[in-house]
Length: 439
Ligand code: SF4
Ligand code: SF4
Image 1: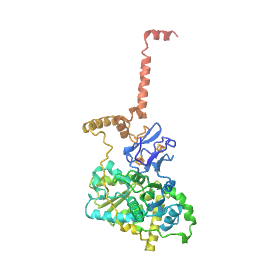
Image 2 (image 1 turned 60 degrees about the vertical axis):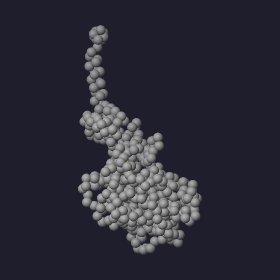
Image 3 (image 1 turned 90 degrees about the vertical axis):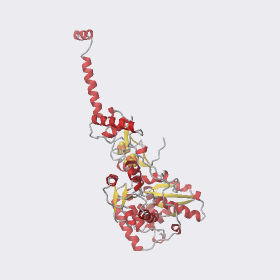
Image 4 (image 1 turned 180 degrees about the vertical axis):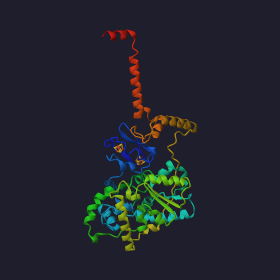
């Protein structure tokens, strides 16, 4: 069966250790037959399991760099996180030039598109087009989390495409106007995370993504590093169009800062995000804007990056300072055009945690679930392959597991069977007992 996710399991590498099952925020993983299976409709591609698996058995399905050669005109749209990955490099122009040197014909910064998206989001907020507080839609994992765990907050989510998608739309429109056939253009997003891979391959708030391929920061880093090390100052092209406002989006709080909404909360790390969204749901957060990012330190902490996210955060402030000292950046006509930044489709309530579509059956299942849960040891040891005893009870009710999957229940059953055997042995027919006594 096909998957609409970019996070997958490498079966050969999985040793069934269960480390990942407890860290998945949506309880999407079960270890069955010693392998960690992902339940497709529960996964939000947050990448947490990639980070925690010491065996490197969880991976994000990005495109290989070779894919760029399928197109005559190759365009890179790098996430601003890329600017923080190289030691001692402050100037984004060096990094953008290196992208061209590894094989791209043009580079257009996602950071510049982020500035345009910021302006548009402000207008939406001022017009009161979303419920308050407005929740950022920048992190695709969080958007999916809202659909799955906080559907009551769907009206709060900013219905605007991501800077990545905006950047790709601007680039294609501009190049087609310059006379390059659209089919010759290959637009490649350089990504820090798996959620953005899924968002481009399987968009659900618009029909079609203008992104043709997604390459991880890790993969381009290997190619760029030797070029950056040997680049002479006169080789550096002036390619940067963004300011520190757009580049700052890569770090936690960057979007809020750029939009100048001072009464805002910026939160990162999926557990912290869940806590904040619970407060929003219960009307216990008096702010105008909530910026939620799945990874610690925002996109700088994405699982497909190279640098430690705290070091990258420090480097980000140096890059921003350097840019501010430069003052002016390259002007590109393409940003004078307009593109549609609105979502085509609204988010959907995807509460997968419900037990059945039929309310009566769901209630019956809930009652049974609680009965089973009461019999379980409730220590959430994970040895059954489910993250909690409650999750195992749910799996049993849904027909996906057995009570004997719990080792404590299995041990009780084995003890009962052994006791029954002993008592059966004592109930031998008199004829056999007589023969036994004769021995
Ligand atoms: S953490 Fe999960 S995916 Fe990695 S080896 Fe353990 S069970 Fe397998
Ligand atoms: S990517 Fe996130 S939601 Fe999906 S299985 Fe891994 S930890 Fe769970």
